[in-house]
Image (cartoon, rainbow, N blue to C red; front, side):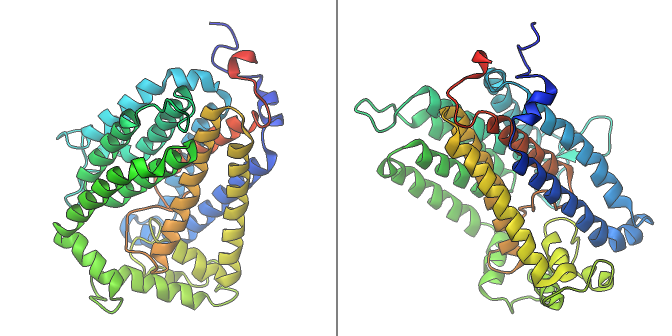
Length: 385
């Protein structure tokens, strides 16, 4: 292989030509996330493992893996990534199916969302990788099949089946929220690619019916819906975590209690270092900190969508749009759940929530955005470089 077969440019040129604002804001978001994990997990780590730094140590190690993934995604030519797409898509489907295989799977509370990582005590959530696979799969298909609004419009059956396959597998893992999230990102990409909305109506209708049946055939999910609609329902059970999170947020006030000052109160939210970590940030930093977080998220999203709308290559533009939407919408959904504005889900907060799967995939998405930021306002493909 020649030097430029896989890697787009020399390492220093890669980052010199990339969106510096995007890179700096992602680093800042990651750093704030590490600080929040350290503060919010100290009490639980001490009680459960006898080490107040147990979670932050693991998060730092997982971050190193994420940084490596980010650098690879930012450096490898997009044409080469497209060649690997069948492997990425099929591999993600196989990994999702492995979550049902005894010995490989690591089921928890009846859910089959995780698989064991060989030679370690860690687990991996394949549905996180499925998000990236779906984004690349749809971007590649829409790029290859040209204008969806022309006289000879291609059939949308292939991308619909590809999207539904992943959504269905993730749903049967008992991960309804992630399945719905992947479906939402997929539908947004259909819309941005120019697919006729009316053609998607039957598909959306069937998907909604299937998901409603999935929700109302499970007492657990029904109770979650009831708990959302009635905040006073079962405050010592289904609504306990959400109620505790809202109390923590309100206790933050305008300026917050400061990192370390409210650790005893922060620890009242069960496993706050994962899905509800935003409550810990809000209590520590107050309204000003919450506003600062959303301004930073807005800036990251602006730079990410700028990459999408300034990239003249359709595959790159749709990939960037899917990656930007994934990061932004997932962040908003998580914050909505923590504040009680949405039903409780297992959606994590990118770069903040403890856990390797979400963190590594967040870095992966940012790596793709950094890669594509070098192709803003250019018609050149990787093969031209």
